[in-house]
Image 1 (spheres, rainbow, N blue to C red):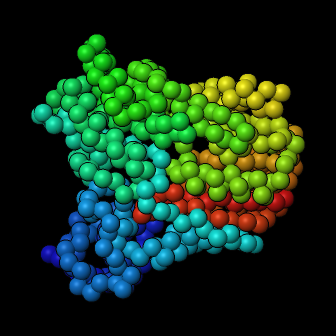
Image 2 (image 1 turned 30 degrees about the vertical axis):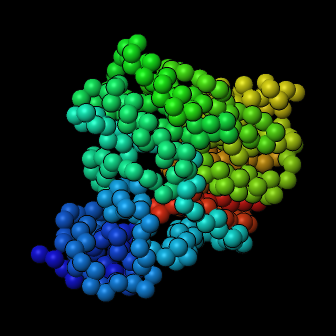
Amino acid sequence: MPLTLDILEMGARGDGIAELEGEHYFVAFTLPGEVVEAEPRDRRGEGVVAELVEIVAPSRHREAPPCAHFGVCGGCALQHWRHDVYSAWKAALIERALKQRGVAVLAHEPPLLGAPGERRRVDFVLRRQGKRVLAGFHERGSARIVDVGHCVIARPALTALLEPLRATLAQVLPEGAAADAIANETDSGIDVLLRPHKRLSLSLDQRQALVGLADRADLARLSWGDRANPEPIVTRRAPVLIVGDATVEPPPGAFLQATKRGELAMREAVGAWLGEPAKLADLFGGIGALSLGGPGRLSLFESDKASVAAVGAAARKIGGNRVAAERRDLFRNPLLEKELDAFDAVVLDPPRAGAAAQVAELARSKVARVVYAACDPGSFARDARVLQDAGYRLEKLKAIDQFLWSGHVESIALFVK
């Protein structure tokens, strides 16, 4: 039976939160201040997930979503929220997490607001269904696929891949089979890794169909398989990324910052906040997006073998022994205090889990300046408190919205010893 609920606030996942008779309810696609009818479904943590039935009294901040798939597609949760209010909420997620940990921030930089049509990395999912291939994203909370015509958050060239992918994968995937298409827009064109969900050997005709896909879609490179062992199908031109004064050829399916504008904002922050350190360490460095191409000596540490190889190849082009790239699992084998003391500054960009073991060593070190790029407010606040307790000040903080209309928000911060 539906309940009448007053939405009090927005939760970290982008669901509206209501309270009734001591119970918390999470209702997707609602906004603070709204009165709604919602049907309770399943428990989640300390509350109940409820499905929206009707908006009785809408918020004055509610807007018409720009995407026809909104509400079904699992990619976006907040297209219905007025952009300025939504953006302020995202920045507040970081501030609230820091406040809960007792971390003081000396200065907030203006946030980088997200914009439609700028995501340069997209993971499409495809499934053969009879003579058709569905191509798009998973439905919200489901394995079903939303067959997408146009994605408003992606770069236009990536959205334009959908029809060629459907036509070609109809010749490649057997009935019921599925694959992911990991598409990165590089500075020299689109790089696609097709990753089948189950092992699938390609015939000569299927390979020729994939080569035809690369030609029709003007792909830079097309590969097949998983990230650990991709098979190049065709390289029409090398996919490259310009990073400072360096050129990197990323491996198939490489992790990129989601938007070019977001990456540039973080690089600019690193340069402005650190100046030109003689010796810089980049931890969880990926392909060097935040550090490569600077004037000093760089030591980059990353666990992904292919990314380390890509940075090593870029370093050889630069020459002069300015860049060293080392494969190292910083969760299990963090740089120790004495190793860190050799550096004037450190940049770290860990995954959502944060960098607890590495930050513990940083806290004991003599490193004067640390720039931390974070993709989760909770783990960032935890690590920030460790640094603060060790005598670091959080001097600058900038929120960066690279995942438009989602509950995810990134940040970059400067800590000074």
